[in-house]
Each structure stands twice: as structure tokens, then as C-alpha cells.
Length: 222
Image 1 (cartoon, rainbow, N blue to C red):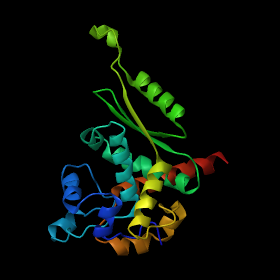
Image 2: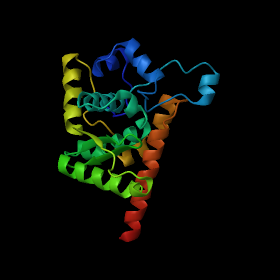
Image 3: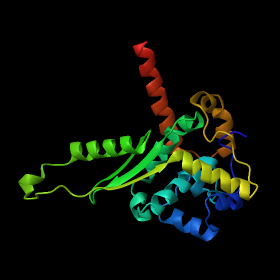
């Protein structure tokens, strides 16, 4: 099963443990954003109602629910939905390869942060370093202490385990690998375009561009 194979909405709702009504409400509020979306042309033609959901969408929703269980606010995560999507899919090849990946959501009341790290200690260190580097000189504003940072971290492997357990419970087929390699996505680009047309995925396109840039830099260094 190819990682980008669409999942029926009825099965998808079971994977994310939501009712159809709740899923639609989350989408309306910007707290659920499918990776594959309708284009303006499709909306103009009235053809946007058919949703396409893939396994990575379900995994992202599981990650969000785990962050909320850890104490994060769903509305706050909505502010960084695009960053969260990109961070997760950027590390799905690592996850499929057996590497440990932790996803972090942090905020200080003014700024939000999404990042990933191999373990919790590294995640805490990177979060602290980020806010310290980007914190203004508070003393000149008469503020003696830096704002407290709310820090939430979940293991991507734990989210995948939860997703696979739900799939097994409801007898739903999901891909053995959650995300295609860059080579697979490039090789199947025409097929993917035909399968989802006239839809598109800005997040996947950005991920492809990032991976191509990284590959070019690696090639230049060799």
C-alpha cells in the first residue's frame, strides 16, 4: 500500500478517534488541515466537497491529541498547524527507518515553537536555546524575569503505535511505511497528480523543495 493512498472518511474518523461532526468542526476552526487540499479552481467549480485523507493526516492528528493530553491547548496548536505538519512529515522517513523522533510544541504567551529532537533532553535544550536566542532584552522594558515557557513533547513513534493499534482494532489497512521517500514521490509525481487532481498539497510541495535543496547542498559538499 503506497503511503499516499487515500483513506475513506469513515475509516479515517476511526483512526483519529473523532466523529464526522467533530472532524468537520476541527477543520472549520483550522485545528485540522488535511495535507491534500482543494485548489481555488476546484472550489469555484463546486468540486471541493470530496475530501482526501492519508495516513500522515491521521498520524498528525494523533500527535496533536497527545500534545493536548500533555496539557497543550488545541487552539494554541492551531497557530502553528502548518509548521507542525511540515515538521512531522519531514521526519516520517526517519520514523520509518527506526530512528527516535520527538515532536515539541512550546510557547511563552507571545511566541509559538514547533521543533523535533531525538530525545526529551535534547528537545528541552533546543527549546531553551531557541527562546533565549529570540528573547528581546527585557530589562530595558522594565521586566526583570523572562516569561515562562510552556513545553510539551511527544514521541512520534508512540503516536504511530497508537495509530497502528486503532487500525488493527477496526480492521483498517494503513501503509507499512507512513511516508514515501523523495525518490518515490518524484517517481510517482504524475500518478499522484492524476489521483488527486485538481487538488494539491502545499505542504508536500514545500517538503519536496526542502529535500531537493538539502540534496543539492550535500552534492555540492562531496
